[in-house]
Image (cartoon, rainbow, N blue to C red; front, top):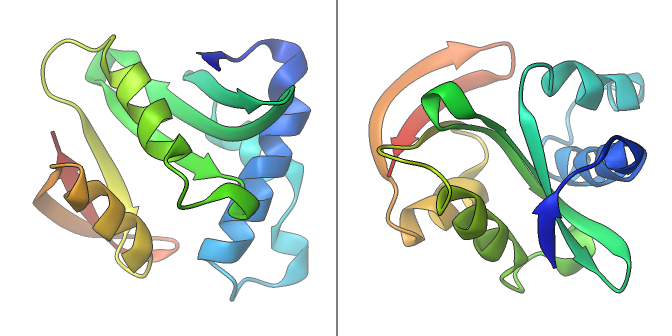
Length: 137
């Protein structure tokens, strides 16, 4: 099931975020992976979740004024099963016009995922985590 996240979902969302983030960016020191990182990243955005057997397995954060996907994280235990695609498509079905996102260049798996779904590169830059690419659909 895909639905908008409720406030009581945030601890489970933070757990998914941290597990997936740790997998995608393993070079940070252990104290970098804290729930506060999730809470800081969602300010001003709306969160959506994918739920399976009563458990949140994926979380997506979107900034609606720009249709900007700030993050999409899937529990590493279920990655590759299509839940990320289904969550992304369900949320974007509510968007009007162009949608964009940024993805760290080091996260090749995520870039391949988005390109497979028809996103295309439209820019690049650098952030705290390193070089990134902007994708549009």
